[in-house]
Length: 631
Image (tube, rainbow, N blue to C red; front, side, top):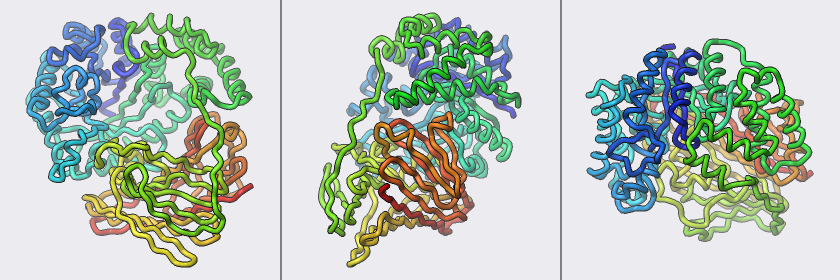
């Protein structure tokens, strides 16, 4: 493997002191990494964006010192600057880059934005030496005034901006690294983007496969696979994912692997992440007690308002593990987490200040928030009419609302927000929450346009389950077909890379519904399948009594010891919670399993389909059924 990178988020959480930045470099080199990639945003003091930088931002002289340390250690220090997206601090300091909006996103069509970006790149290149340059490029939301223009072409504008950056960097002898997700959100860019860009494919959980690597490479892109530890440590969940990702690097002959960390990048954690990810890449075993402790920590972090008996059991086991001999080589971690789970806030802050500057997002949070908890409301009782069987069409939140009624069941669809099912209820019990915002969201077509309106979503997985999929985030055509005993709602959308059609069928007096999905692929040699995202509502006290059952097997989330697990069911799966259960039936030939994520207030038995390589004009079809029953 040519490229083994460790990506350390310094910008979004903890501002790392220079002496510990150098230690992190040294640890990464010792662990066997070839490249160290600090995520910086405004933590590098470039003259062109000086007004956006905090006091602790690294100076050019400090960067050169870091560079020298990296060379001595035998590791490459890769500079980072977001040429598009994640520019809140920059836009706040330089509002002229927003094009008159207040959305805190750069308007990349403006000459002043292009000049700003190029100037920043030139300044950083003048005092950095790596042949690589991480340019970001992920999760960009085009300002609404651009998306509302019917003549505006987002994919072309995005590709032209990245190509401009690539030309500048290649001219300076650099290789640009860019995250993958916008290429899937705007698939036209697969043809328009410069092949000088190395695409970093990020996905942080287990999946049935990672065929996007092959799709990209067949189109002439060099790729790097990226796993992620998010704000935590290497857990059982993240280890399983990383092992599969590393296998995918070999399977698809990718250029390398990168482990990313995000948000809470405390040195106490990252030193261990560096060490154990290095062991993973070297094929060495990770201690079970280390993985168990980190997985239990994840459960506590995800369930701050969880059931008292369950949470106490988890915390007691975790504190027991933190007393193990294992941690003697990592006393800073042991001290920090013992303080966290003993509720010793003063010790937590003391540990923080040893390694990090007294400013930044995480420091501000530590000083302003004493108790972090989730406020969970009591279960809501809903009224229903056993005699109703119809689709009511009305206006809500400034958009059409379809309300499907079948006696004691009901659900909602907002076609202009996407083809998701909201507020699914049986006998007054909520199975799927109502998540459409009360105000009209951003203009359709952007990465984050309708991101808070998910509900239950079918997903056309275009080479990747993590698909910011514009299909979720734009309007669908809709048609209602009614008879005395059947209600059918057809939803369809035609796009550059695919045409999709969903048919929801409800039978009078019969619990549940079926969903038939069809995709007509429009691009040669792509991998596609249908998945779905199904966030089922849990109410306080539910999780310990919730089970998932299939083929005579049964599992409870609280017994897994992790916040995520895979269920190898390919046919029927039953999610059983107090008062109600939901049976989900799928096509065995087109299902690889169910992937469950859980918290105090939800559980997601998400389905993964089996990827199929498709030519232009080929169809992919499958169907699912959902049947609730009252206990």
